[in-house]
Image (cartoon, rainbow, N blue to C red; front, side):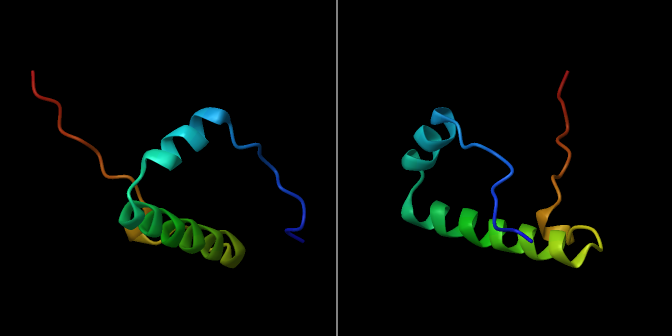
Length: 58
């Protein structure tokens, strides 16, 4: 079912990825794994993966 990639990683992504620290890469890969799990489960995303809004100062 998930054998064929549905995206292309752009050069910009890889440049940003290479600049991450080891700890940041580990967090990114863990978040990716959780994201895929949630997609496969089909029940929405867990709160830890949701983007939090930012308050804008005038």
